[in-house]
Image (tube, rainbow, N blue to C red; front, side, top):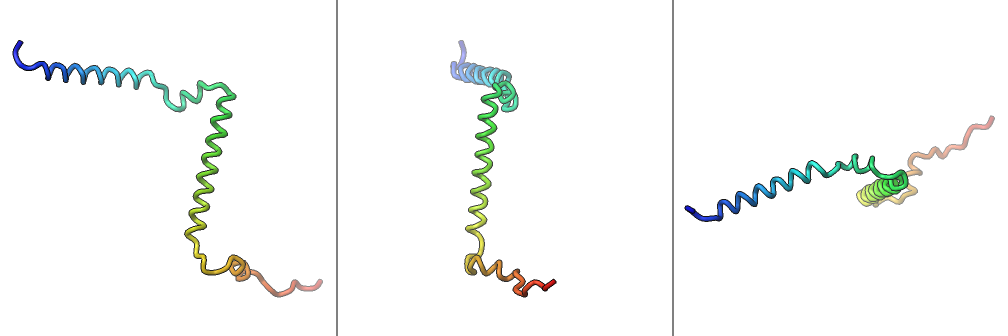
Length: 91
């Protein structure tokens, strides 16, 4: 026995980790495979949660845009700018 056992131990540990990672990658399903394997009831629940998350993100984006708008003018002033105040013609 020449040398230290550390290089052999480190190499063995690295091989063990690499084999474990390869087995995990080979046996773990993708998100789509996992979704396809669900029952229809669970698929409905997942779809409902995804829809709720997308609505929440859209609402957060709407709030963010509302915060960034210019708040110096009142809300009604914007609509009054485009409104035609002349009465409609009589027929």
